[in-house]
Amino acid sequence: MWSDKYIGLKYNFDGRTREEGINCLTLILLVFKEVFKYNPMFDDSLIKRDWHKEDPELMIKEAVKRGEVIKSVDELRANDIVFFTLEGDVRHMGIMVDNYNNFLHQLANYTSRLDKISKQVWKDKFFCGIRIKELHGQQSV
Image (cartoon, rainbow, N blue to C red):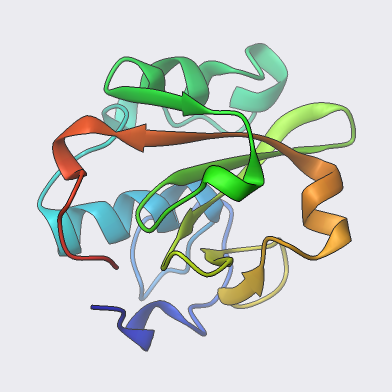
């Protein structure tokens, strides 16, 4: 069942906790750790300030090891991790919170929020989704 406790968290690129603030990547890690007691992608050693410059698809490659790639916005479901391109690189991510277009994400200099992935701006930037095998059929965020 969806909880709004992840809405309104402050932004801090280097933050790793609610208190410090978080970025889009650490938001996903926080949700998966607290809700599912599961790390969907990697350990903290892979989180570097410029991961998207060194290897723009690093997070996707790590997530794919644990799930299947979803190529269409219309096929996304609750708990799928979604990836977006910004400025030509895959450098933004979120998590679907339901089967009705809502995803949670953290944009730079804003608090975390829900948006509709069906909005044209997000559809245009959508790169892929990853459905984590171990979470198929579990409660949603």
